[in-house]
Image (cartoon, rainbow, N blue to C red; front, top):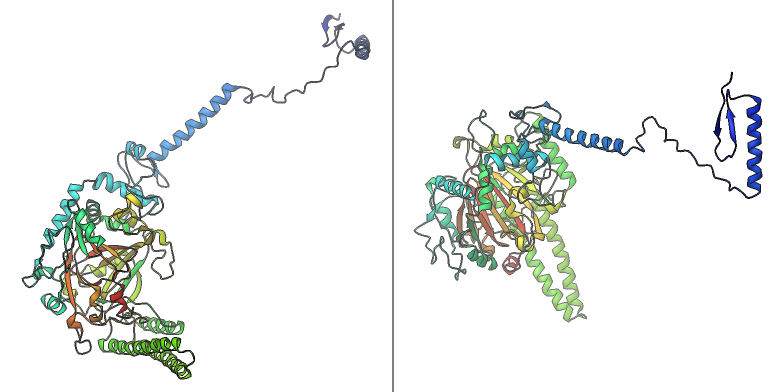
Length: 621
């Protein structure tokens, strides 16, 4: 028995019996239904309906496309996963496995300067400061942006040496007392008090004295300040907290002075000196060692001299001469000889000969200028034309002879090396019995390029740059307008930040620079002997074109007055710089520097003035 039931097919008025499903009657009924539906459509009674395309996802087993609750759950799961990963990375050191929340893994020896070290810090401090520590007063376009430096600063800024200006100022004051207080020599009286100067530079400022009196009072080869506390100081010392208005007037007049008790400078000095003079290797490394050593440490510029004299030079040898000198040096080193490419400041008599050749050349140039001036007014004078041609030939020959004789007798005063900070420190931090003017000395250098970029044409910046100097020395940052630091006059003209670490006894020869200078001492002591640009003719400068042009040919440790008779007519003054001091040195002022102990000095330049150009031009520059 087949049980039948009726159902109405879609869009049909017939009730169709359904049963077992495949009998003849069912097929006939369906054909009948289709004919009747066609007739109704053709008669216009019923409008043909479009077939609706079925959504292929409608009956999906997952159903997530159409279920908003499923979508919300899926999104929540992803968000919670991301949050969990973030928390996990806060508690676990990347690449080193899990670490305890309270007990942080200590970095291994040599890992201080590395992005891979475990930097510690509580969860609260990490959440408050973010994953990356923002260094106070840092700039967007200059400075160090790597994580290792930010974490090192986080450690010192928040735990070891949090900002406290009074504590930092007390530190530099204590350093000055430890090093000793300098006072005026009885033979060096001034009409003004150098520690309480008038609001405006007095007439004749700064007072200067005969150079031989200053050198006799304290010979330059003697780096023992405890035996020489009376000096010939002529420049003022201003307190940043109370005498900034005075310093501004002196700076406007382009005269030198020393600024003291600047809290920003004191903070840097305190940080750089933290653990700097540790006595043993078992002690905790100091800040500078953490900053300059580690897996990412760079072999930085270091200068070597066979004695205590360091004279700047530019290598003017041709390529073949350079190759020949380098080959000879390499062969001697391969033979086991302890040799270097630096030969000291050079013989004064040879320097005098170089100056004589320059004097001859200058005389010929003056004659040529006079002859050309006469010819310009007498263009038809054939005899004048011949004289000009003759002098031009003589000038050309004099130039060739000067260059040839200079290079025949000249040798590089120093050798430029690459060395790590600790390697330099091992050479430099020695006892007095290993020091002496005739023993080797090393000069360590750091460079923050800033806007200069890498690979400058003059070699003043390179890949070994230390961009964190702009974060350390915020008072030398190239900020504009109201944010401009006091020590920078033209921030756009800044030529980076340069630091030189000197060992006791190092001498930087007397010279002048073509731009204004701001010089800060952050550790140790340095003695500066200064001279006005109007002393140029008495300084006996090596001429333009010489590898050490702008530097005095006179050995101030042992002046040769027979070859340089005008030197004893020079007048100078001096000042001893101590931690936290900043010396403002105007354009073209002469300076001769002696390191009185292991020290750290940094400077920056920002444009120049033409106020002293006439005096410098008289010397042939």
